[in-house]
Amino acid sequence: MIPVNEPLLPGRELEYINDCITTGWISSAGKYIDRFEREWAAYCGRKYGVAVCNGTVALELALSALDIPAGREVILPSFTIVSCLEAVLRNSLIPVLVDCDPRTYCMDIADVRRKITPQTAAIMPVHIYGHPVNMAELLPLAKAHNLRIIEDAAEAHGAECLVDGKWKRCGSFGDVSAFSFYANKNITTGEGGMVLTDDPAIAAKLQARRNLCFGGKERFRHEDRGWNYRMTNLQAAMGCAQLERIDAFIARKLDMAARYNTGLQNLPLQLPFIEPWAKTSVWMYAVVLEDSVPFDANEFAGRLMALGVQTRPFFKGMHEQPVYRQMGLFLDASLPVTERIYRRGLYLPSGQAITDEQIEQVITSVRSTLV
Ligand SMILES: *Cc1c(COP(=O)(O)O)cnc(C)c1O
Image (cartoon, rainbow, N blue to C red; front, side, top):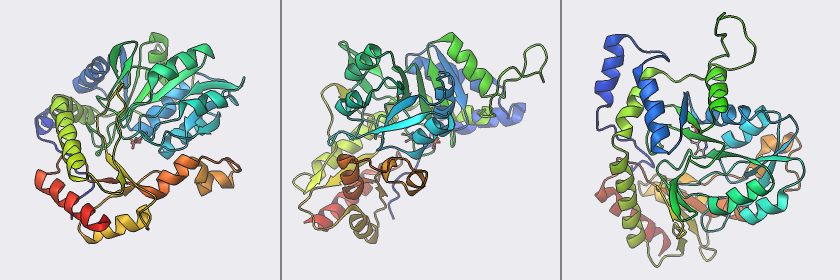
């Protein structure tokens, strides 16, 4: 079977992790933590990086550091991972969902504009499958309404967006930005995440709250509440080694996408669309069945699996989640694009370890399923 994602750890990962073990620096202090924070922030064009134990808590902590009063609204896409919604709810804020663009699957900015109210405090753009949200439109909108931005860049390591004539990396736009380094992301620490910001006061809050807000002078005297969301030096060691390879990783992803694009032409399948103002990092190669196909994504996935090709379904929109509906949330939400692509979309094997032969095999399997 061709797995949907397999990481590649080809560089100095083992050497750096060995260094942690032989020197005894295995918890959340150590030179790799500092280095990974500094280097990842610099790569993204930011001043401060605060490493944490995964991308989900990165979002929660990022939002917490903005200290938005409870009960205010945060606008976010329905088409995303549950982590985004949980970050909003766990900060006692009200989620307001928007639909997505039918071609990039990123948040629909016209819908954001419609849903801004006097209660809105922030917007959470999520760069989906490596394609950036149109930040050139979103940033001025946020500014005009005095809204904060929490950027979820967990799928967009190295992706870029054209703003004011300049290409800028995803993760450089938000008041706070969150990354994940889970095993299937473009660079990985196994489990891991980071929050980036340019604001020294926010950075100080992030550092304190990820570490239980221990006191300065008196360690066990607490003036604020926090969590233990620390990353280990071992994880950061892996991150440093992965970061040394990021250019090659992204080049390979683009090469993979080019091969899929060529091999999957002239099928009733919507292939990834890239806006002229976007440079994708191709986190996942996502396809959507056209309406002429007489079966849905679930059936498509089953047929591909029978041919030895593992896929992943698209996100089920947050407004269709039983858990939130039971809480009385989103009961009359109608977000047709999100609803449609959830039923018609999946992503093909897209991991770093995939070979050219496997890509060809996937193409042959998809063609035989659809022709
Ligand atoms: C992976 C992901 C996260 C969460 O990251 P974890 O490290 O798995 O907790 C958050 N947002 C998006 C969009 C993701 O794809």
